Length: 270
Ligand SMILES: Nc1nc2c(ncn2[C@@H]2O[C@H](COP(=O)(O)OP(=O)(O)O)[C@@H](O)[C@H]2O)c(=O)[nH]1
Ligand SMILES: [Mg+2]
Figure 1 (spheres, rainbow, N blue to C red):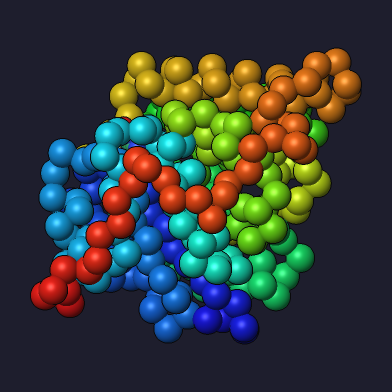
Figure 2: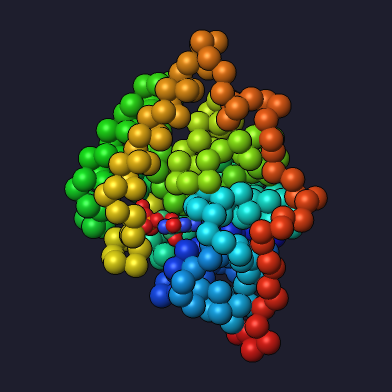
């Protein structure tokens, strides 16, 4: 608990066996109430390790994609009664030690969402971000800020915190099951007038922390531009899209999803 708020950390995992323990070790357990791992049918030991660590482990029976994974994560966070939910990649790319700062900005500050930005502070390239990803990040961000009338330093980080109201009210089930989910969610947050704060977060790039290849990055980039264009058109009443529909499908924490198993912690959990 933090200042009377229940704090849940969710980790959407895919082949994170080599890094999940190190990531978990740095999560501040004095204020985090629950850690949820959702495994998207990994081909490595992610599930066994998560259970041994005593984490609440949900497993997709089939691979559903990064966005599908987050839908499960946030549904579970709502079910657990989270007031603030932090989404953290289990690939040890972002420092979990910034969680207290991020949640304070929501519980005691004016923000509904907080992003851990790799761009603020200017050390993304020193951290090892490949040049093509850096250039794409800056270019896409400039286009998105122009189309969405916002001023964020980046829209592509895997480190985010959200208020309960965001998870309850946005039509998140209208979003893609692929990587662009993250981006659609930020566009929805801006569209609905929620406030977004940012904090600088140096990110590390090493083999296990970055697996998306060039082809998938290009597909993601095109999805990002499409999302920002849809935002622009819908804001001006020129078109209408399900992701910005106030009546669109929301997460339902009362439903039992058929595609997910919830595993207890292993008997010898640490
Ligand atoms: N569900 C799912 N997640 C994936 C897949 N590929 C990568 N991820 C996750 O997506 C996140 C971002 O991918 P990553 O390779 O770290 O991207 P980068 O750090 O931005 O270069 C990581 O947490 C991965 O575990 C996939 O095919 N399915
Ligand atoms: Mg990564």
